[in-house]
Image 1 (tube, each protein chain N blue to C red):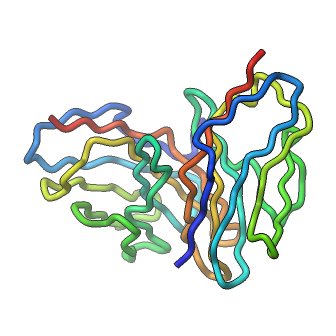
Image 2: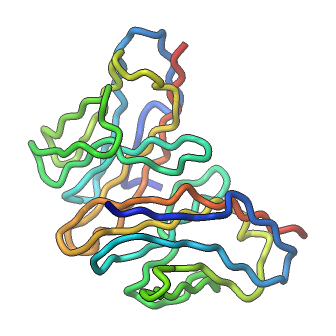
Length: 110
Length: 112
């Protein structure tokens, strides 16, 4: 069975400081990993996915299969980054299911 | 914000009553999903449907039922058998090719 672990429930950083939101997964095959974000009073939305290898709003995430991790990083936090972040895993070809972590609330202190 | 809608935004019911939550999408997506979101629990999958007239149980299907008679609609019924129904319910849909899930605004159900 697959599992996604986000070890931090809450992460507080100062504006301008680097941010790293941790995500570890357990899955024996080749997963597809995502980060979803939920800003206050807004819908949950996709932030980025590992296969696209793009940077969205300054965030990047690299899939490390050796460490089974997909940490989300940003070099300089902004106040508007404050939100709830969820890491999610799709187990592979043909699978529609996503397994979500429990989420990390990021608070950027002005 | 169109695309996927959920109604109502807030719903109140008495214990012992069944209640149906609406989810509609006009994105022509094949798959639809229902999640339950509780504080500190993340999102947990209740049911999902890949095509019309077919659906699969997720991780926490007990006490819930769904139907998928139309591609656009995927209603969720919270039955009286659900022991802890008070929660925030999210509906999502995804296209076949990317599997990226698009979420609705959610329905907050309170059962007293």
